Length: 239
Image (cartoon, rainbow, N blue to C red):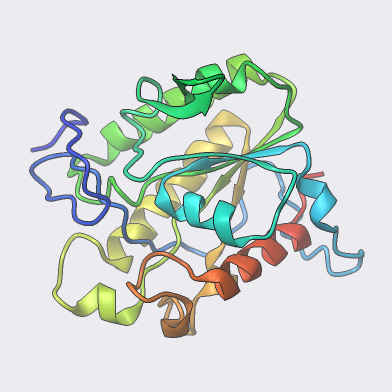
């Protein structure tokens, strides 16, 4: 069994035995969820522009790190680190601030944000206990609410992996587990009264696989698809 205990940093495989830091996998259902994230279709309104994210902060692991590098957003804030997980994000000092490193929560205390986008869960796919994962995730959301009480919080789904990554070789980093976790994340978002947004409709094929051209490793998105991700967020604004 694996409780959310040790955190060896790998960002690639997280054997079910340890909560090693992988940064992998994802499958989600295409439901909206929780508070309505305008996923009803927002098609009747003009898509927001990049300035929409000026008061936003993006929190997550290496997938979010890639989004920060490739999305082209100049004025947004990104607090991310390869290998971040729900059991270490509250204590690991990963944000550089004033010449020192602080935790993401401490960094959040220094500025008021209007929107908080979170994506976690790919590194935790090897955890055998769903309830441990969700319990830790709830603590993360509650901690963010404490320091950003007026922000709209959006939990993004775990993005699926490519067909190649899903099948070869078979591991716990697969879309079946991702899909299961996303259903639990959506339910958790409803309970926490925060927004859940499923990104997979924009990033996956009809079989639910991350588009093969979206990633060289089947997990982390390239620049073209980080822009697709950004555009999807702009089409599904939080207000």
